[in-house]
Image (cartoon, rainbow, N blue to C red; front, side):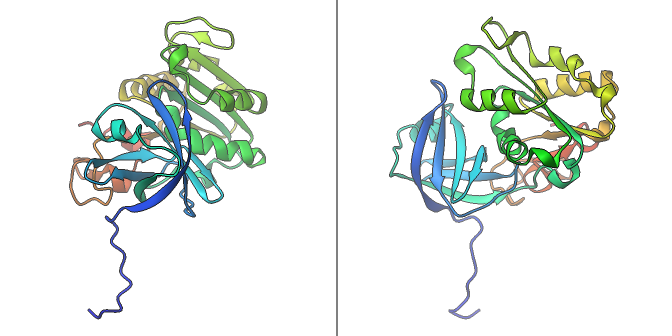
Length: 269
């Protein structure tokens, strides 16, 4: 191999300038970085800090020359990330994985069900629907949070409420204006599935929430092949080499993280 090889190391992180940091909650911040990359809704990046470590994060916002990632402070890497300021660099590599099949969703009624920080993984898809609403027949968005202090993307939630056909927001154990009380899965029966001709359902959240939401959708008569989930578990290298995310013969980082439920229902650690 000659000296002129333009080979790119797919595992080499590159520095990206942080232009803004939005405090969503006490433990969740959204970092906007300058980047001329256009990932697809549902893909993820490996974010890292030199000499600290790295972790996978879904893209929560996609714009012209910028990307956003919502990070929860839960460990060593994220704790160090919370010390960063606009003007600092965040190291990234990616995008990795597949994406939500947006072309398949066009012309259909779309139901998006998100629990907790699962809304981060689906926000870029919601952003697409918001900007391209004519591409779909309708959007029904259900999302739930633990309590008022856990609510993410308050401004965006209000925009979705104004534009989408139906929105149901809930808090597990608090009562406030604009939110139902109880788990988001308790409100799936309010989605008018029987009125839809062609539709697709997207479910993202903690595994128990996704299991419960899928079960309720099936109870409402939704066919398995109409359900899509995002499973971001145990991913490390992002390229199918380390095996951390392998379940049977499936590499979540390569074959996913987006799966049709006909496949996802059998992916058990």
